[in-house]
Amino acid sequence: MKRVLCAATAGLLAVAAITVGASAGPIAPGEVKIDDGKITASLTGQPGSAVKGREWFANRKLGNCLACHSNSDMAKEEQFHGEVAPSLDGVADRWDEAQLRAIVVNAKQALNPDTLMPAFYRDSGYTRPLKDFEGKAILNAEQVEDIVAYLKTLK
Amino acid sequence: MATRQKTSLPVRLAAVAGLAAAGLATVALAGGPNDNKLVIDGKEYVTELPAPEGSPLKTLYSGWRFRNESTQAMQLDDFDNPGYPNVDTGEQLWSKVDGEAGKSCASCHNDASESMKGVRAQMPKWNEKAGKPMTLEQTINACRENNLKAKPWDWESGQMLGMTAFIGSKSRGMPVKVQTDGPMKEWLEKGKEIYYTRVGQLDMSCAGCHEANYGKMIRADHLSQGHVNGFPLYRSKWQKLGSMHRRFKGCMQNIRAKPYEVGGDEFVALELYTASRGQGLSVETPAVRN
Image (cartoon, rainbow over all chains, first blue to last red; front, side, top):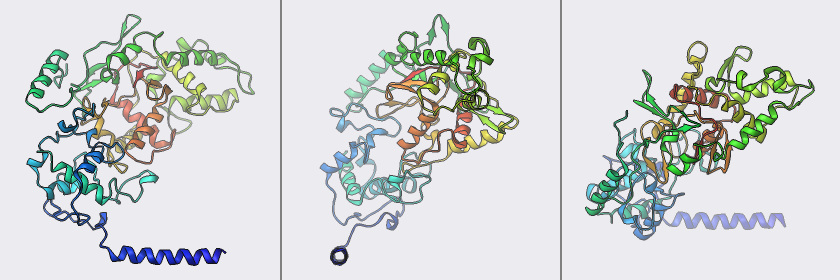
């Protein structure tokens, strides 16, 4: 019985591997290159969803962008906005899409090595990461693209 | 007096209204520490003083000054202070015989109002026998094991919190004064390194919030300077009294960092360093925060 299960699992894994191999997956955190403060191409190869991005932006376990930044677009539904970082009102007038993507991915590389802003798409090189987050980035590629799409609406 | 962001409430509201009219502002600004005075039983506590030479801060403010008025009010009267029942617990334990030696704390230390005066203010304190600094919790447990021949208490137990609150209350109003020279120097440096090291998935250090951004809101939390003069303290989020190391641990978990061990050398060093940053602030044990 056990052997049959193993064989079945191996078969499934093979199928899974082929499926993954067939589609071009998102660019992994370790593969992303920031050039001159920019990441030109979408991490997923697809444009993100601004509607979803708005949700990830406020979500305390994901972007939690409001922890540090204020955002007038959310003044009505979110009472507490941070003051630690610049307001994101009009952020799309100050940065273009490639710059916004680079800042979300890794602001220490894109902007300033001393910024308090966490890198949202980096999965290694941390000191004492909590076990649940070891080897993981805060956001996945799709969530980064969704947030970038949302930030682009803040004009 | 500090010059940063100290505006009166009407001025702040007016400023916000102006910005809101311009379509810019979203929420009220925190505006740094407030100007309220901490007076308990007619005695005023030092919640603000010029920072000592070499401090990265200009003015030291107790965490009490960053709390809102309803939280502040709970500390103004011991009957309203939800941490005060712990002091009563500690007082009862003080004279309770425990352990094989058949002694209580009072058997040797007599009246705590005299013998424990100023103890909290100097913690952590260098212990020659141990060859390292010891926190109040560690000192109590060493005494229990060596002198009372009693079992040590768990760090965050009701007994330990009661005893640290009771002993701490005997230093209330006295200035924090930890030793920083001699053998403590090495521990101070170690604590400083921890304070400035970015850790966790959020890659932040203590300094990133409590030195560079105190007085500002981080979502619903008003960032303080991170002084430790009120521990153990009642925190509304915990709904009970808690130790300084518990707070350190929680802060590290918030930035998704693996916390150091409660009572371990790293947190003892951090306790020493954070205490040294608040030298001169009044001990407020048991303080009230949120």
